[in-house]
Length: 215
Image 1 (cartoon, rainbow, N blue to C red):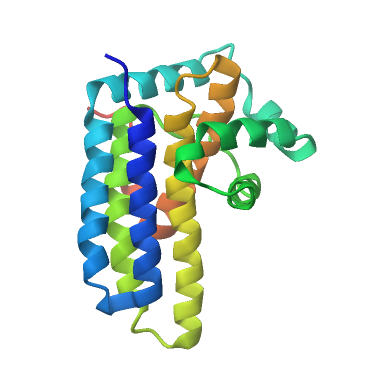
Image 2: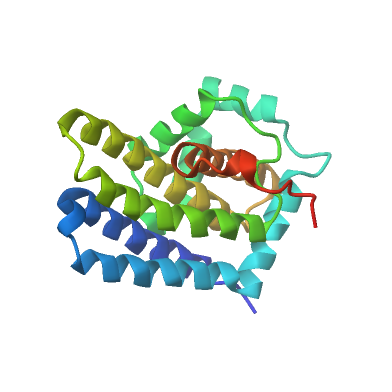
């Protein structure tokens, strides 16, 4: 059975829309809570689908294969000639309605940090990341609402970036899971490292998680 990656991306778009409402309305936003939770459950249901998990695992295996494009080559291409990659990625995550500016912003944040060659081991790890991030982000927006102006502005800026990293990170992996191996390499490195950054900045539990080779 074919996986419904477009459905996953649409659910992810609805989740992001709900987060934007929380960002604007803060702690008093009760109506968006229901919409966010509904979209969150849809995203996680898609990630639990065997067909989608298989497609994501296939992309990951292609991207970490010995003959895959090296991280150094990916980084060099994104620095010197990013336009072709940006064009491909925008097309495949079209259901998210992400702007070119947002994608380029995400690429910029990834390029400013050291890349992990294997940021995500499998679809189950990806799902666990989304579970944590989708819980933390709306709660942190509500908590930020009671802060004084400067800390609130700074925290909301961090949360906006973290939301972008989460949505585009997952979107790149999902949207590009059925492309050829070379495209999968870029999607995996960009998307995986974007999610790693979101986890480090917003959840702060990455280093405390069990090693991915542990039982």
